[in-house]
Length: 161
Image (cartoon, rainbow, N blue to C red; front, side, top):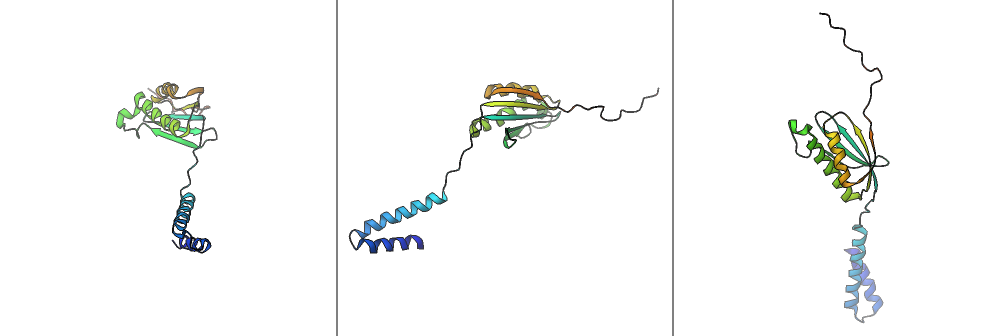
């Protein structure tokens, strides 16, 4: 408040009494607008056209993470977070709903247009999730990044009967 008061006093002395009341009101309004402009800057909205959709489909849940090409997360959703509990969480429909929720958010906030899909895991939500993506964005590539064991764990000993 003291800053605005000083500016109006300076303006009143410069105008030498002619219309000092209307001039001071204008200067106060300008000072308030200037302060508001500094405080209330508009947040820059990022526009991302190319996205990567990571689908993690386990036997119990489906997790969808949408990132930009650098790997920064834009949006995510899970079947459990969409309201599915227990055995319904591990269904293809739950995977569809989670994918649609994450994609809608990415499309609304960032303007996603083309997508690269990476599918991980053997769960029931993987194929259903890929089918839903075609309704929202144009798919450029689908890849399965599920790990394959190269002669992994030691097998159990032979059963003797």
